Image (tube, rainbow, N blue to C red; front, side, top):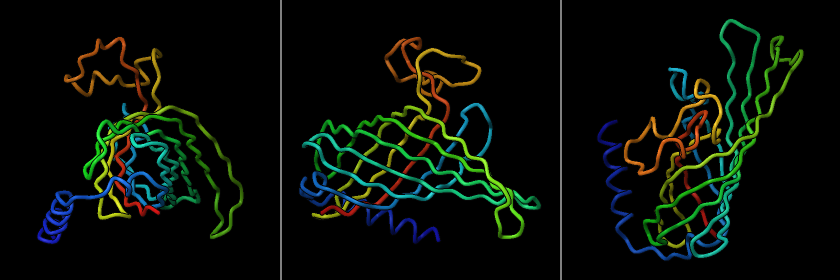
Length: 202
């Protein structure tokens, strides 16, 4: 298993060194991804894995618009409850440098829908859903794989806001001492997520 992972990483690294046309990153793309989501930064729990997909549309040479949706269904063992989470995000990606290896900054808005269902066997007896709205921001990179495909990975802070109760949100200055910005000017955030995906461009 370990040798397989090392082989995959070596292959990705080799592909990253190959010249890749910027056109692969400027068109319309559709792909799949997985995400590791931590809904509350103040709670010591493991991140939860989601699967989903994204659409990416190049707006200019250095900007891309992304629409993404992730999915997670959890059935509580020993209880007749099923929880469905369906976060949707709209993000703007900004590329300081557009090349085969293209780092980017991102920011946008999200709708985080959760539905809790009361089950009787396989039948839904009742359900209740809630939707939260929030801002997010982060950073990542895309690696072109030939002319019509790319992989990407990024880190996103969710529930971004300025001000508010520090007991319910974390501050970006708590996570990094490398940001040359006074902590009072940095936004707070509620949660975080890692994403990694593969996109085919047309």
